[in-house]
Image 1 (tube, rainbow, N blue to C red):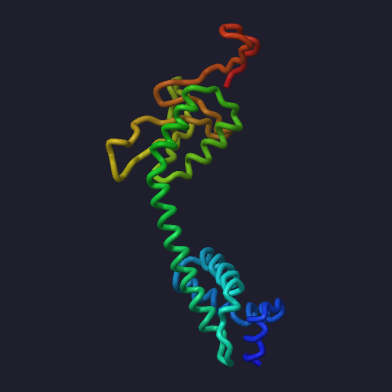
Image 2: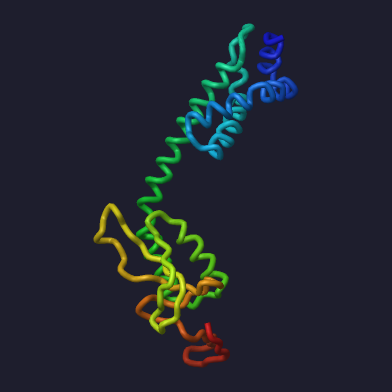
Length: 199
């Protein structure tokens, strides 16, 4: 039976591949958990393992042995590749925050953003490495909110001393710990105010 399953998998039979998955997915999952120590990552590795097995099916040697060792080998390689990609991704992110943090700060300082946009920027920047969320920070006007600050562990001279302050509920930008955004105005021409509203 295993020989015919192997031949059917090599031929690209979807039913045979479904059977291969049913018989081996739990073994590949347990193997992946042991390799990564992470259940969520192991789920991804199972999916990638069977995707890679489908891609490599024509290279499968004919014979009558179990396909499990082949799948376990693929899972091990997928795990290594996934870990290597994660390390590269983290290394790239580690280089990214000062520039991104400074650019977003310039956007906050130079533009009046809609509350929805400042909330989206808050959520995005808060996820960057070395960016810290600090509760109960006051803006320049004394309003309490949530602060974002950047701490560069590898290069302390690039650490920021200030905070961007956001409203705790709406995440609307309030200002910095040294300044405050108090009013928002829309103008048609320079100096000609057409609408005013508190931020």
